[in-house]
Amino acid sequence: MVDRRQVMNFRVRAQQLDRARGSLAATAVLDIGVQDTGPDGGRWALATRGVDVTALTGDDVVLLWTVRGAPHLYRRADVGVVAAAVEPFSDADAGKRIYDAAKPLKAAGIGILAALDEVAARMREIVRTPTVKGEVSGRLAEVMPEPYLRHCRPCDAIHLYEMPFRLAAVRAGLELRLDTSPPILERIRGFRPAAAPGDRFELIRAYLRLLGPATPKHVADYLDAPVKEVKARWPGDAVEVSVDGETRWLLAADEAALTSAEVSTTRLLGPFDLFLQAKDRTTLVPDAARAKELWPVLGRPGAVLADGELAGAWRPRKSGRSFTVAVQPWRKLAGSTRDAVVAEAERLAAYRGVPLAGVDFAD
Image (tube, rainbow, N blue to C red; front, side, top):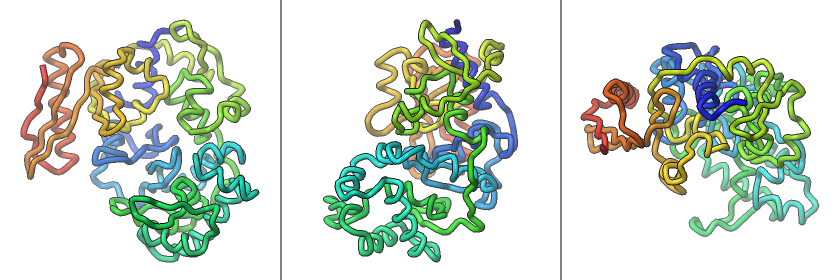
């Protein structure tokens, strides 16, 4: 039996949040993908794990629409196995992942995987040179039949459903150009999907390795996949552990690490950092009011990680060239922890390329 404190410590170490520096090749979170949402997205997540992001280019990393249709960073060298890893498990799984877009396709007798292949084929024909997303969408609407299309009220126009659009992009061998808004899609040079992802990149195993111990439902919720599809592919070397009385699973190779020493590190986690993507939110933040503060419907803050616990929320405040980090602690922070938060805020300001005006502690 283990408690939530041990689970938190395990994840800090597994995700290398206690690491001072490290290379892209040795950065574990890139095996599952690093969500790149907002100004403190993928590269900040890498920076908090000791990666020197100042010299990162498109030769090092690739940005793809993958899990939950969100943009994620990966090592460019891994793009073939990543494409295999993010492939839906089945037609039923693909249908769940594309949400309401599945209904008209099913009504028309079109298989979901076949539909994604059709969208991918048309997308690849369209994107011969770097192309803005809106143009790709508009041209797709001209060539795809009705079951693939929807009326977009804000635009008052006909578009392809969003999730098939996003999930078909990797199948089409397309990446998102870094630092473009609106997104620019372009062909992945030398793209060739692998036949299988292998253990390192297989998403169920990667979740257990980085966000375990977990249940099949936790993994399914992370992937937007049906629970039965995840259970059918559950690793044979997953072992049962009891976390505060709940049965969960962990890869056997990681069992010893679950009970190893505690961690002492302070980080400012971005709003979509992998550490905060775990689907057992009551493990991360047992207090319901604090959880609501950290995961509102809109406008997520970042989280303060201190000594293996989430100790508060933070938000960036930028006015012109003035940059302040506003911190809402959830408990009284020791002087050394406050100093560490300030040091992390200085690192964040340097990452953003602005001077730090100060750290505003709400207490």
